[in-house]
Length: 292
Image (cartoon, rainbow, N blue to C red; front, top):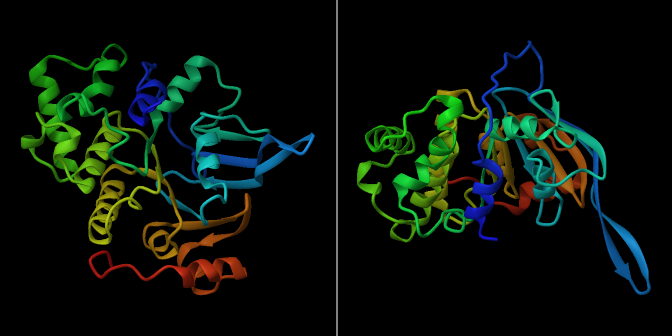
């Protein structure tokens, strides 16, 4: 299934509006001792392969948790469990004080309105047959009844211009299609679409790894600005420790499905406890000066 269809099916579906106020110290995301296992044939035996093992962390409203580790460490699997795309084999995930795995259809719809993903490949996440106006405003059209949104062409165009302006694009983009843009511009369009429903949580899965260094730095700075402007909460997934250190409030380090170290971002990078964390820091270069 193309990623753009996947986004539409799971995160742009119609769902009721149900805002809530947060108590002081209440976590937006709570991951409690989650495991994810898949059956695997070994010779004549069917064994369980543990992709994620006993992982726990929280994400407070307005902060950025950086989830870092090499490919295959289980980062994306954890993100998919938070989004409700797969269920934990054991443990629980709570978002907005609701257990994701046991949520009813209406509850899950509400949760998915409050959390939106931004994927690694900015081109695959966009429907190549749709122009930017339709891509960015599609969530608004789907939610027009619940949110009381006007969906006449003039209103949608005005909202699209507002969203594009927030990510550094202008109205000349509206009638164009994804193949007419650079990788960095496509990722900005993805971010604009993710912001359309004004979610609380963005799950950013390697959002700049497909971009060159300078363009990626611009997108990272954009994400930082948008967080300050809208009070967003981020789960930022990456294999680059310097990048995670720059954007994150706290860092959680995963190795082979396990959470091996976590802590405040600057302190953890300055004094890592685990040899694996030190290897991640040594393996990735410092950020370009355009980010710092």
